[in-house]
Length: 253
Image (spheres, rainbow, N blue to C red):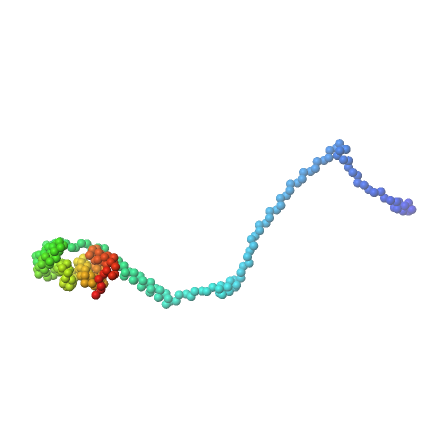
């Protein structure tokens, strides 16, 4: 026991780790270092989701819309009816202002072509005299044409063409009242012939305009064009009236 006690009290030797011999002094080559492992790529960053805006509560939207939005009142039945009536009135006015004209009528001015096998000798003679008077009138001698045309109605009082050319001769002589009287008779005889009825209205317009009745003349011209859109007398007269200034037209009586 005494020996063990002395041994325990004796100072202990320090244990030293043996140092391996250096590579310079040792002929044995040092083992080569193991290759370093390949670096592991970092994980891909997760996709960043866009920040979501907080949704507005439906109750807030409704309250804001109710407070700030002013709703226009729905059109009433009376407003719809008035609008409809106004559009109908405008369309009617436009239709009346620019009426659709029929195509021109075929030329029916030849009087000799009206003489057929069934024409009576009296009627045929009256038509021939009327055609002769028309040629004299076109030549510029209304006085001479008048004497020839007066015989036409003596032979056949139903010859409306004779009354028309008598009215035209009176107009060329400046006798507008007499011309209008003959035109009234011609209209009653030629009412079933639109081509000649348009000629009557056109000549009546010339007489009325010569008397200063511009509005009546224009109405008569328009009636002639409605009957026959190819009536040159009425069409040219309306074009001149539209081109002339209002002050240059004769005063309406």
